[in-house]
Length: 542
Image 1: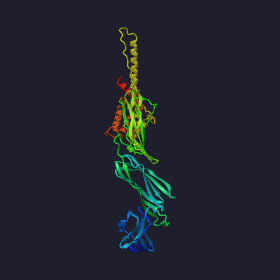
Image 2 (image 1 turned 120 degrees about the vertical axis):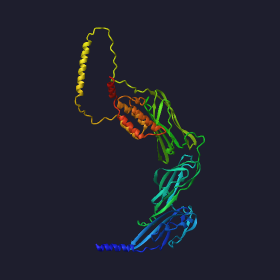
Image 3 (image 1 turned 60 degrees about the vertical axis):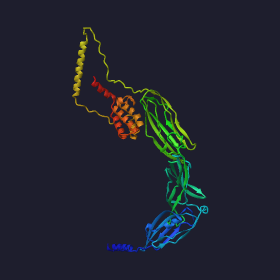
Image 4 (image 1 turned 180 degrees about the vertical axis):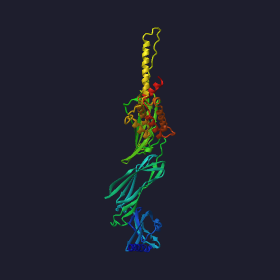
């Protein structure tokens, strides 16, 4: 055990005893020469020691170059106990002007690199050279209105394999910028060279009128440098690149002075309703109406809420609108779905008002409307009228006779008295018997519609709860019910429904909707058939 341990300590001593060499060599190279003006190229600086990142001062480069991203890497090699270390900086530079410029000498700890003469050419002179990375952007409209969705489409062109990278969104003052959908990967051929193309779409919604500058999107990443050595362990296998899209100046138009209503802009809009022409209408029975507003090139949060009105004699219970959007073929399609429960409170003819919502068409530069016609319906009286109890029967008093002859009545009275005494004796003997066990069924049959009501309570859909509760209560009680007469048979349930309506549709919410829904389910589940209640009333009122 001593010899291996001693050998290990000797090895560690030898390695730790290697002297820390100072910087004796500093080398600077570029990945291309000549370079195009305003196009990024890579400057690589290598020092033969482990140096801090901040040891290299690049401020001298700012005179003639735009300094981009800087990355630092380190490596260590040990050969026959001889350790060599290396620190490598890769700096993205873009020449500011045409002509001949010089990358000045860079110094670390008194050791300097050699200056690098560089030729900067224009794009026209270098048009025969294929760019490795390009970033192009297009706008859907150069003169959008305030609140209009501006489609900003970015295409990243890659001539070489991408190792990693990131596209940064455009920057706009007084606007909301949001990526729409997912990136689309494809390919294009430009000047005989196939490019991988990554397409991304942004939505820009501007808040203020006037001239606005859109600072173009930016790409920052690394590509595989296929021109260098194919050695898998080469540190020059990838190089950093950057690309910028052009900046744009747009004119944002104000809201027209003659426009009336909530302002929103769309290329196309449509309003539809789910309506059953064959349905019948009854007092106390909710009428469920589902409206769908669909529009293109507008954010879903900018779609107006539907203000559904109703005539006198109808209560309206709107649910919370559902909003969603999807990007399809370069256009944003947004949808708003609104469900409304309407409860008639009186019978007779009824007219549900028409619906008209204004919107602005930027193509035609005019106000347009989405409309639904008025609907004329006939409301029948409630079929759920209170039924007289079947257990109580009125008896008419027997007429009085002045005849003094009793005839057979005394004997009949005696017979009924004997029978009554026998019945009383049988009841007394039965009440003193030991109770016999009753075999309960293994399960209780579920109340029809209760599961649907439970699901509606879970989703807190007030309109569906209003529609389902009377039917479920009717199944539990064994009679016909509607919202109009629910309070007569299930007052606790009716009170909870009222609280739910106030909680969902009033301006001030003071109670927990989830707790109210659970309370409603418990009250409905506790309901008992009316027949047992009537029997109790008969015992109290013989």
